[in-house]
Image 1 (tube, helix red, strand yellow):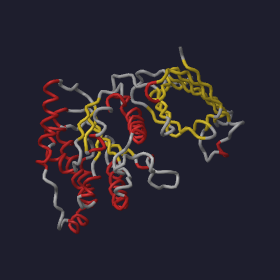
Image 2: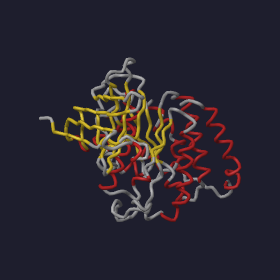
Image 3: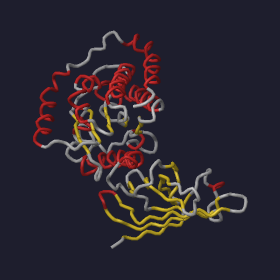
Image 4: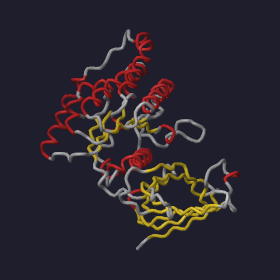
Length: 352
């Protein structure tokens, strides 16, 4: 972690709110999960996890995904350690046994959901997260942390206003540290009107069903593909996430660039084509197979841009496909697309 002073400042800003909520904030006893932690330790003894992996940790939304997560996030190296019903305080209590021992290169964390159900305040949850981050600053300063939104659910719809407070707090904390990322999961689990979807939950109206986990997995993998590619020995490659309508290319070479720069590109699939949504420079240029060729007008405006890939994979590993997507200012000027570059001429074919 970096910028630990900012985390301290954030905690100090929370103090007035914490004082007002402190009375009656009874934490559940972490000892109720001793058996779960021992099962993890036994599994580690039988089959020691790989070093430099990505740790998934948190409550039942991670726990229900423990078995499927390694395949859903392949080829990334994953250690799934979700234990159902947990709260943020449980992670602090078992920090050395369920986080520190793995020395992960990155952590995907889901907590806060059960905390609210226990009656804990948003300020308490965020303050405990700041304490957890302080531990990581001290012990694992280079580890990246991905904070998952508290997901909306029918069973806990009465807590959604409080959940949004926590989610906004996660987003603010992520702004203080270049190694912390906020994954806005909730927007993908709501319908176009902002209402809770009813088709993505188990009969308990709390936990995700297979459709829900398809979305969940794709959102997380899209974030990890974008941010972990520079630190991964695995070939992540270009991916299209059909549930979230995102295409991520983790390494793109800009053709005819005298500085030979490399980029990460993100696209959203719209009714008009692929809309360029993210354009970030890369610190490393390994595994760059995709290209972007740009033609400029005499006054320096973009006249034409062509994105090409021969490594496109669809959800669940289908592919590879070749893809050529072209933007041309004569067909779709950015003045008609809200300033966005839309690649409206698309050709794709399965590579045999």
